[in-house]
Length: 387
Image 1: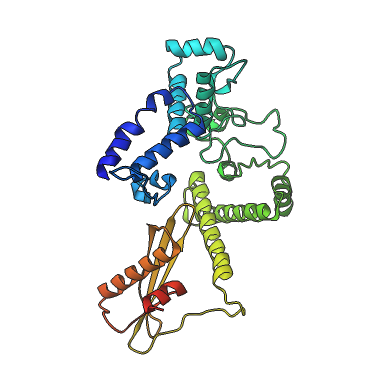
Image 2: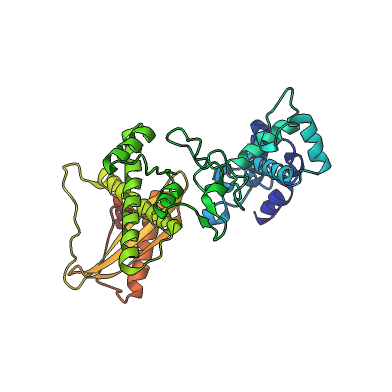
């Protein structure tokens, strides 16, 4: 199998790389090539088709994620075209780039170019690569003189800023307008800088600000449609308000230096942690609550015994998994615990791995016998008991 892996990576997926630099292969062609490679991988030495034990998509995952690192030809094709687009952007004076410009985008920049009339296969392919590239590209600010606040993609993980109201004519238009070039800081009030740098990109107009409840209602009405969106935005606003207040108190009481970027980072982390716990509790109530509505609680083991509680969590779409172990004695005293990320192929596999890790951990603590293991997986428990 190792020889087949080398042949696939060095030849089968490498041969199409050169034409893929210029042409977007049809999806059906990529699928046919991948199908032939999969047949070669699972085929028998004496000929004939073997059983495909895993999908080709699973084999294309990185080895650390449970795959073999084969290339997904469709994504590889798009990546090569994106690389070609970057060459056009970074080498505008190259002869081949000037020919493309004269033919397809004479009066605009490459990022604004369109297909035009009767485009070639090469030009259509390059534009697909450009769109894939620009979807994740960010403008490098430098001095900010060439970066439009409202039109360019310059804030990481946030996309182009969408104002909730019409942008006034006297509002800052370029990023350089809100930068103090002398000390390389934002020329905004610190609280305004926090709101502007947040995922909500709010521009606070102190002249029109009346009361907090009116301000919050205006934001919620303008930016949300569904109840879930309103809840998510209200959660974000709450954590940003709380972080601003905490930082303000530290500055007054302890002489703490206010860093708007740090405030944005702390508020964002707090919001993510809260949502993980909140959603986790909602999921646990939905999936583990008994039908009669009773709430399950931890019960201590017999005197002299220790109890190992194990659990596993698994996402079928990405095979990401996590395991957790908690060890307590008969009085409920916490003896130890662990949590770890894993790659799993089924919920049962992850539960079993959690059990193994729990037993290894409790043995390392010196408890070889008089140990209870408790799991919420009936399939695992029945399998161990031989039922």
